[in-house]
Image 1 (cartoon, helix red, strand yellow):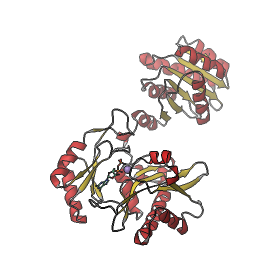
Image 2 (image 1 turned 30 degrees about the vertical axis):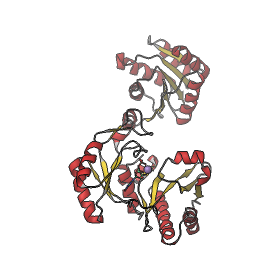
Image 3 (image 1 turned 90 degrees about the horizontal axis):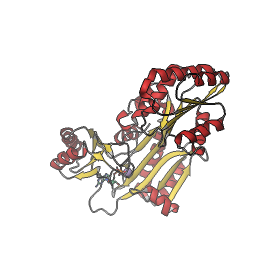
Image 4 (image 1 turned 120 degrees about the vertical axis):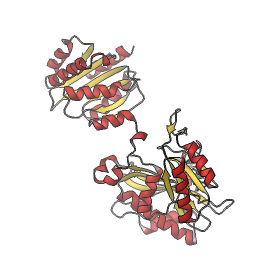
Length: 397
Ligand code: GDP
Ligand code: MN
């Protein structure tokens, strides 16, 4: 689950990571009130107005603006809220901005002593360990740095039993070229950051930029935070931070009915039981010349109701040209699934306009094929994997 910048910063602050102070606002008036409050608390006269959407590259898209007085706060907040922000990380239509973060300006104008670093904490899937990834080249496209000058990106692997050790925190500060107060501040910063990552069950904390001010403060100016979905049951406070407006509406609906669904770009909808079989089915579709439109694991109970829910979810995607149902009847009997498919199809009437290929294998597979074949519906049955692939190819033309 991804969070907004302001939510990520709240978590950071709760673990003692220094952040650029800010207050979230939903309209121009709230923005002005927020700016006034920040001026009282921090003494800042200038404020940055930052669009809160789940996408990076906001600065490039015009979603981060500096306001030098309250009038500019009002104008800029007014124009950013409600806009469709298009950034290198959004679709061509962009993302609607519902709220902005009003933050204290922490850059001192004309100051050559400020420095923007990159820092993230994430899981290295190759080694199965968390790592801190960091670079002196923060503030801009880290992807470009990784591609053109990979030697400027450092990593520090963390032993899960020991956590981030003091010498590692010092090595990071040293590699970032810091000394004196800034060095000590960076050691504190990265130590608190790692603690925040670990104790919030996050899968990613990305801080770009980490700012070093000319008076040697180290702080998070941006925060991209993802919390592991599987840990949300024990992180209720974070679970409540979920902003459904930012998520794929089909995935939101699927989650509500308990289906494990991931939206993809292709044209063949899949309905499968079991995550492993779902992956194999996606491979099968590719081999048949199609592209999977989704990953969908209906789980163990593929009864008529569930099959119907799955149909409805798959059909919400306008790109779907065919549906492949691939179910292994181990615990659930194939004939019952077949009956479920037939019943769901009948219940849905005209809603299903695309060809359906059903492959049922396992207990009572032959009986299931009979049920499908005798239903009189436009459903193609297959028992073998290859047969199913050939039928997909056939219906895609
Ligand atoms: P992103 O573009 O979505 O990654 O958003 P960021 O939060 O990283 O902001 C983009 C850029 O805005 C940063 O790289 C900074 O250069 C700039 N920025 C952020 N905060 C401030 C600030 O307080 N003052 C000034 N002058 N610039 C800022
Ligand atoms: Mn950023």
